[in-house]
Length: 362
Image (cartoon, rainbow, N blue to C red; front, side, top):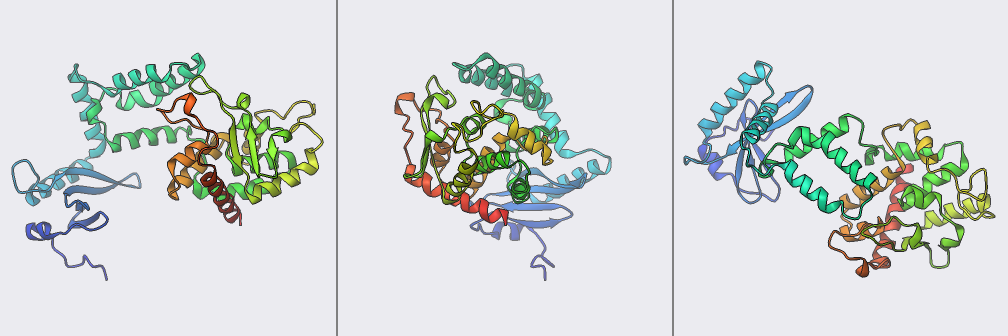
């Protein structure tokens, strides 16, 4: 039986609604709900469906004084929203449009675009012109048309989510979701090109950058200490510096490398091309993923994104993940970069990741 059946929300019930460990909602009927936060605050929301998807629009904070929204006022707001939906007006889209109009009228407002361009000028110091232009183009194409004119203090979580949805809808999100990972791994296991298959599997296990994987040499691997040490000169340059990078080798990774050694062990490179003096092309993995049906859905870099997403969701320390991705923290200086930092924790994390992939493949 539904515990809310027969329950009638009134001012007394709202006032007596106690905070819990997690947010929960009380129904006031016909789509109107009261969201109760763990800190005790209570917010009116209206739940509706549009184009087959459920949406929530905020009405205001519950209260009985002039600055808050009472139960009767929430009922009135609900009926107003229902009338708009009946006439084909999406209240959430209307609200965003009103925000943009208000921002355009307020010429002196510090807009998101102004702040973003200030950030870009600082971020771009030391970057190549190509990298800078690429980032600038992403802002101009995907973000500014939607929220660029909004005052920075008015940009909320929902606005950011809309930007992400916009980018995702045009196929720019070239990363398989964790839910898609089992199917992807099974398809990789059945890939006909053995050398390319091993390259994709090693990419998944180590989530290094494509160029770091493709140009890998057998001399970089320390099998006794179960480490792959990528020399500084092969690492992506960041903040005017380059540093060596350690990749702890999980049990599954070591087994894969032993199998790979029977194929390319006589070569300098793990993945030699037709000319054994050179590695395979950087596009090899991208083309293989395309052949597997993942064009526009997954790239070599996508393995890094998936790993980061899963590891963060599983509660691994952000610093361990970022160091394993060979990312420098924003306030970190080159002289302080320690390529062996958190190595013990990263080793355990990489073994967990390999176990996770093995289980997902089953």
